[in-house]
Image (cartoon, rainbow, N blue to C red):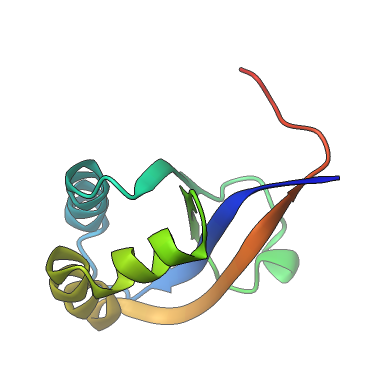
Length: 108
């Protein structure tokens, strides 16, 4: 099993009045401006049973070359600024940061 970078995974439930489209555009803009982000994917859960979802609606995944690149990202002024706006519209959140153990990589 090989390691394949460092992952930042965020699962959220936005507040009722959150302007989700604006947040998504802001995230896409943020990651396009910071080179240490190697990949960024997001999705809205529309398939899981509510009992399993526990109210969470969106997942965001960023991949970095290594933990140092992730740490650099978290202290970047654009990330610090965006995080304040992002946090303000979150009702619930789970964050996981981990070294990726690549068992089978997908090629789409």
